[in-house]
Amino acid sequence: MSCCDQPGLQPVEQALETLLSSAQAITDTEMVPVEQALGRVLAADQQSTVDVPPADNSAMDGFAFNSADIQKTGKTTLPLSQRIPAGVAPQALQPGTAARIFTGAEVPIGADTVVMQENCQWDDGSDNDSSGDKSHVTLPAEPKAGDNIRPQGQDIQSGSRIMCRGHRIKPQDMGLLASVGIAEVPVYRRLKVAVLSTGDELVEPGEQLPPGHIYNSNRYTLAGQMKALGFDYIDLGIVPDNFEATEQALRQAADKADCIVTSGGVSVGEEDHVKACVEKLGSLDLWKLAIKPGKPLAFGHVLGKPILGLPGNPAAVFVTCAIVARPFLLKCQGVDDLKPIPIQVIADFDRPKPAKRQEYLRAKLVLDDNGVAHAEIAGNQSSGVLSTASVGNGFAIHPLGGTIKMGEPVQFLLFSDLLF
Ligand code: AMP
Ligand code: MG
Image (tube, rainbow, N blue to C red; front, side, top):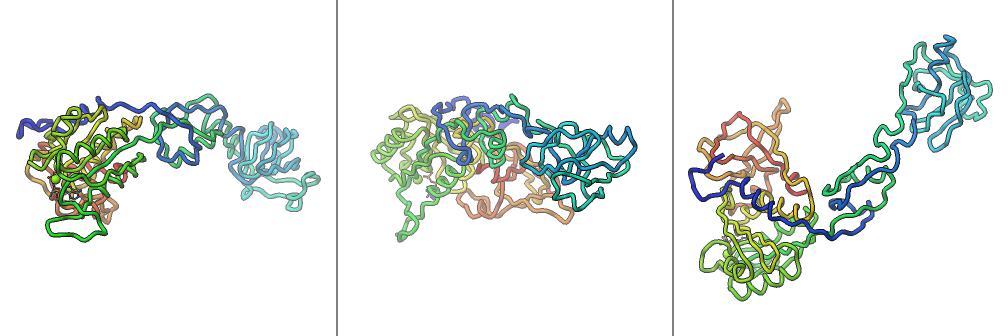
């Protein structure tokens, strides 16, 4: 990939590599109950000390028997010798008999096959008769040996690793941990991320909007993004456009948080103080990223804490946070899986000009009548337009140097993959 059209602009992938190579994962850990582990990041591999299931069990309500008994005698009617509901430890199967068995119940030693009850005829009165006296079952003519048994260890074998360090715990992982008897897990403590919005023009929602002002939206977009990613969000509010206030806010942020995220004030205008302040308190590189929206992006350190200076425009904040800040912060949180995998869908739009910056188009995934997924542009793509991020459900990627043709494949990143 080349960005020869605009020398000096860094391709997104390249910038991400640099950024990620400088990310230091936190090391503090804590134990949490599995029930509260959703979204947390495992600080150690998890191994099972049990087989799941712990013994062969029945996949059906039916009858358990030994297939050799039928093969030997040719008789398919067997006396019933025991009744095994789930939760009961069975006795070894008496040779030449069958056992009434229910879904999930342990298959008795000596039985190798279960036939579902719908395929059997049996002495109804015996069903509640645990002695099994006089009761019997007639099995189908040629039952398949081994059928309907879920073997011991089919899901997990004792001693096997079920999850790795760096894994972010999803609902099904909570169930899996519980299935091997793990009640609590070591996780990294939540990454503390301080967020501040710069700008003299900003007013909080709920307040009167004086002339020349706008409502602060970045604070809320970022709060949502930080919370969706599971971080400990530290809200430092609005910082006015002056050097002293910016320095004070940055000192406070560095004191309280592991990482700092700011919005606005990273251009090179007279009212943009973030860069100068960070340079006083540490170091800052202003990056010109080949990304649209969001070209100006700052990265550096304040009193030893990493700082990501996002642009001010609301859509640019959403994009750069999702594409650039997210993987960096997740790596600092100890996560190993940092890159969402784009899906390929059909473009319902044309972008005939080669992109000079990789463009993350707010787009909407829709299904056509044949069930094929298409990406539609969500509307205005200006960096100040946030409504299209709300209408859309993902980014269609217009790759650096490439074009997009209506009806041809385009890469699509779902917001749901970027907000987790
Ligand atoms: P800046 O990078 O500070 O020059 O900001 C670029 C543009 O984004 C300006 O139009 C700002 O008014 C706007 N902007 C900056 N911060 C915010 C914010 N927190 N909420 C909404 N718009 C913002
Ligand atoms: Mg500003």
